[in-house]
Amino acid sequence: MKNPDSFRRIVAGIALLAWPLLEFLAFLTAPPGRSHAPAVFRESATTVQVSALLYLWAALALIPVTFALAHLLRRRAPRTSNVGAVLGLIGCGHALTLFTTDFYDLALAQMLPDAQAEAVTARAGELWGFLYGMLLPAFLAHVGLFTLLIALAAVRVAPWWVPVTAFAGTLVPFLAVDQAPAVQATGALFHLAAYGWIALRVLRMPDAEWSGEVSGQVTTPLPARA
Image 1: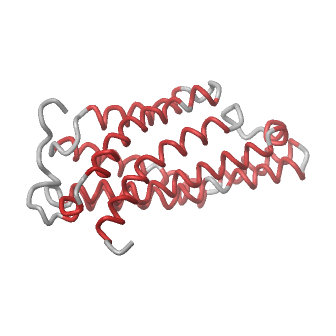
Image 2: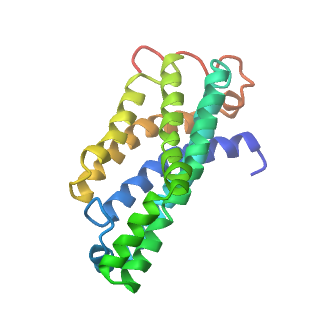
């Protein structure tokens, strides 16, 4: 706590590991099916709340992740670092609001007949403020993260398999939307491999390298074996 550089570096490393782990657990505990069917939500009331909280914490962890990736780029690609950080943080902020909706859908399922609960949920999804002000902007988190990851690979701070693996991890839940939660959760394992590689590098990094006091350390090209 007395050394701000060390504290921020450790927080960054922990966040890089925590977000894919929280994402994995969130998918694993999520109720089956792509829609918020009232009957499913009632039968899985506890896991719905656990999953929603895990998604919320995962989105929260993405904030220090975004700052960490931008920090690693600040010397070699400052403009890309800033653009990626802005897009990522806007997306993360909106994503945090989305995962509160599961609690409202659960309350509707418990208090109203199924048809009415489904009608209210459908109507909420059609509101322009929700669709254009909350849902779609949340996808900027992906845009920001991939901007930063690709830039890290371009300046050779990370190998190219890192953004490729992270992209695969993002695609899996969309491609497996009709599959069991355990199948969707495998996408987070790709994220764990990609972000975990960066996390280990950050956690092993000397404080002087992280702070930029050692010239060229943060942006030194990777050895060939990496």
